[in-house]
Length: 344
Image 1 (spheres, rainbow, N blue to C red):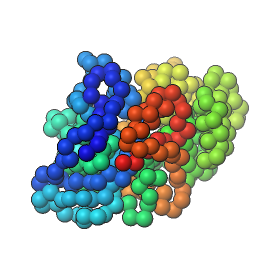
Image 2 (cartoon, helix red, strand yellow; image 1 turned 30 degrees about the horizontal axis):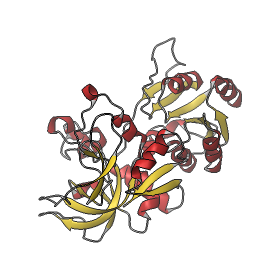
Image 3 (cartoon, rainbow, N blue to C red; image 1 turned 90 degrees about the vertical axis):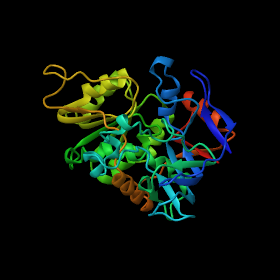
Image 4 (tube, rainbow, N blue to C red; image 1 turned 60 degrees about the vertical axis):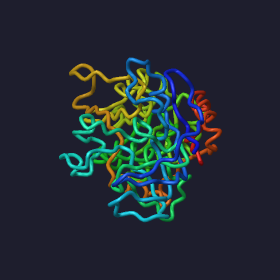
């Protein structure tokens, strides 16, 4: 079968022929219907050899959807022919956090060498993929897998970050969304669907600011020093009640710290290498700073329900598996308006 793999440090991903996998006991074989392209893939492919821990060759794709093709011995809960989305942050299923559905924060994943698809385990950018347990599948039912596969990360990750800040997003509050790209344009819709907070979107790209307005931002501003004063003016000097940074680079985390008001939340979702100093003189009083990772399986179910009701929609452009390397080139060039999806 065909697969898109990262095969050597510093090289570009390439389409190769590899054997079709067969499910072992407890595993599920999916015929892939869609796989999402993510900046996280770019990040891991940019790592130097001494920091790369994901194994080679690596079949990419941590956002996946497919049709159940074959069941390993003992598998229950799904049926051959069923359309499903893959819940990506696999855990042990048994530790305290996993018992609460928080496999994204599994306490034993590192010890047991459990790695997500496309981020250590073979991913979804192939004609077929193995899912280690039916526990990591969520029924799509009537949802189009191509239009909704990105919600498994680009929807779930913002949803988890925003949901934890909902107590701050009361009527009259202000939310700042930094980055209106793949995750940010979904994040804007989620803030709109879950709260009545005024939404201020920031980006360095005018096209993405236009997208931010289309999907529900009340204000869309260039992400620069002038944005700090503009946000202070919009909020009567109070600053934002919540800041969701979907870039996470040093300039954006610095900006997040400047616009966060008293008792605000700063959620650093992007992995651009930035950080926020926490100290008495660094931030407004009692600002909470966190770096959330993915989300829970139950939250993925909730995100898909929002999509089913039309409350969230991912802006996508599609590529064949053969054209998948081009999708990563366009991602690197900043030319993808929303999210790229590979359709085997």
